Length: 468
Image 1: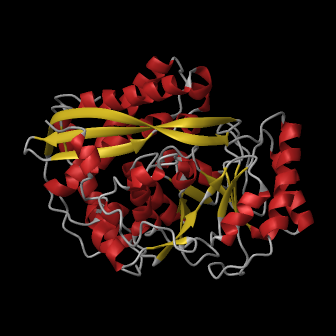
Image 2: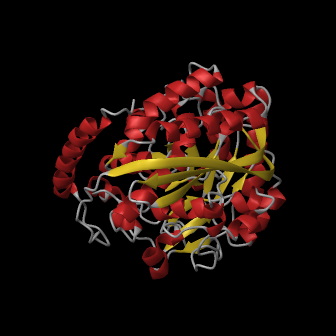
Image 3: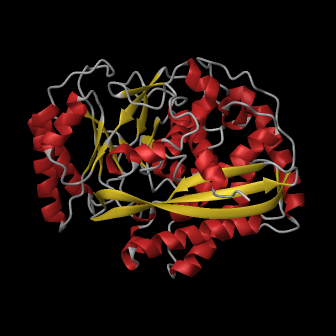
């Protein structure tokens, strides 16, 4: 718990981290673009005032995990330091994604309200306290925010990802405050030295990966491929019994492969379009997944499967390193400790989400993955355009994914938000060359890195919510 005693903890924790930073140079990689920023930030930041708000954004129904979301809450957090600097952080709430039991137990709005209450609780916890860096702040907040969430949801098994999702807007604001208080003008300066090796690459292009809900027609998927999208996220785990699910999933795989399996792309080593399947934990047994993979082999689609994400529920401890295909952890890799456990179970990729599990936790996970030589890519939470660029700052700096020549980032907001163009106008650099998909990729050119994708600039719309 954060309290008046936390300053002593902060000093001790900072000393420990300072030692880690010094040691980091011993295992830093030969970077394509070495990070020139080495001066550690030591300024203590005291939070004088906090506030929060939210906006509801209607969605075209997005179906996964046997259900669907139709409403997306944008959580907005304000942090003001005792030096008078005010920063507004954003978060998009993903109740169904982060804990489907909470989603099922409440109305869609009530589930969102519960998560928002956890964000507000975190803000009240840190009012009047001091922190050194956002990673330490998150470490302090997470246990108590999770405990509070278990209490208000009535769910003693509430998933840590639900609490992390609630903390994104707070963590987002903390990074912005940390940057300005310490005179940091670019994303690279913000990354503590201990986590720089895992975020040291600089891709010139990042794949823009659309996501297609369970039941999407092959014609719609073919249309996306015709528009230049070369890697597509395909939701499997159809509704119904396990037998009904696998039959529908196999039929879907067959239809997709027939529609786009012959397409070519310059961004993969084999020149073929790669498949990215996400079952969102719907498969109860490994044998069922093997049926899906056997069918892929039968129709000649197996070698085009780049990754299968979260086939099983988190409680399923089945080893997945012997399937002959790369299996990625997403929502089960809540924290860096959970990610380490998934790697032990044979998971050979991690979908990281700075926009769903906080930038702070993501830095820890990407560094672990880097040291374990496990590739990462960025997945979406159907977030707003500003958060897309928070994610893009990570995606552009991850080591290349095996078989691919560009960074990888799922982004599906343009598909599901009914008012996407309105949200895009809230971006402080809406006309940046990196903000629009061009033939399936984002151009992460010099201007992207110089401007950090625009994430450090204020958004007039969200700032105005706290005027006066």
